[in-house]
Image (cartoon, rainbow, N blue to C red; front, side):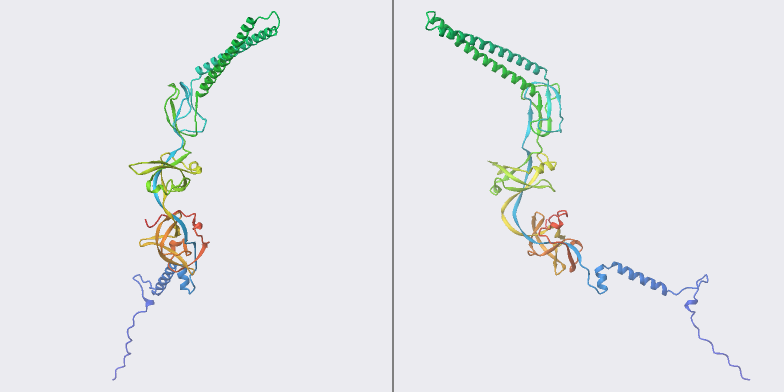
Length: 424
C-alpha cells in the first residue's frame, strides 16, 4: 500500500534581530539608533569648530568684515642719532656753613629731610650773643650823649665868637681874645666830628651783634634734601664751619662727556632727546659746552637744562644715569609705520595692508625706531593703510572694516603700550 507523502521540510532561517535576547532573557535592540546619535554629535562638533566666516561660507554667504584699527604709512623728518651716557647733576648742592661761632643748641633736621628755602636747620646758643647786643646798644647810647655834648660846646663857642665879632669897632675889642675864641670854635667842631664817627662805629658794632644773633639760627639757603650732618648738639663750631650738606633735587641738569666728533652738531639752545629711564623721556636744551677737551677720552663736558615739570613730577636723583640721543647726521625724510602695526615672526617682520577691503600680509624690512614708529626700508609705500589693532588674529584675505579713522601717526592706538624694534 502506498506510503503517505511527508510535508517538505522548511528552510532554516536566522532568528530575527528583534528576537535576540541576552543571557538574562532580555530582548536586544538594534544598533541603528546609536549610530544615528553618534552622527549627530559629530556634526555638532564640526559646526562649533568653524569660525563665523567659515560657517557663513559653508552656508553660501560672504564672510563678515572684521573691525580693525588702521593707520597710514607716512614720511617723517628724521635724523640719525648716537646714544651718549650722561648723568643728572644738581645746580645747587654743597655745605651750609655757620655764619656765627657758638655752641650748637638745637638741630631741626635729620639726614634725608626735605626743606624749603628759609627753613631752620640748626640753632646756636644765643645767650652770649644777646648780651653782646645789649652791650653794643649801651655803647651807642653813650656815643649819642657824647655827640650831644660836643655839639653844645660848639654852639657856645660859636655864640661867644659872634659877640666878640660885634665889638670889633669898639675900644673893648681884643684881637687876641677873638683869635683864641675862633680857635676854640674850630676845636669844638672837630670834637663834634669825632663824636659822630664814634657814634657811627658804635652803631656798626650794634649791627654786627644783631647780625650774629640772627645768624645763630642757621637757615636753608635754598630748597633741597639734607644729605649729611657735620656736627651735633653741644658741639662748639667756629664761624664758617660746615653744619649740613644740602642738595637741591628739584633743580637738576644733565651733564655728559660729548665725543669730539659730535660737538659740531650741537648749538647753544638746541634741543636733544634724553631718556631718563625706560619709560620717561624729555627734551633738554643745551646750556653750555665747556671749552676744554679731555686729552685722554677726546670728550668735552656739556650741560643740558631739563624742563621744570620733569624734575617736579618724577623722583629723580643726583648722579642718576641717563641716555642722550645726540644728532650725528643731517635731517632726512623716512617712511614710517606705527609700531603697533608690526608683527614679529620668526621669518621677519610683517604688517597687514588693507587692499580692497581685505587684509593682506606684507613682509617689511625695518630700520631704526622714530618716536612711536619704525622706519620702513622696504615693503611699503607712502599712503598705504596698515592694520594697527586686531592684526594678530587676521588671516590672509580676510575682509576688514576700519573701526578707527585712519591716522598718519597711529593716534587711535596711542593707548597701546609702545613696542620694541623686532629687528633687534
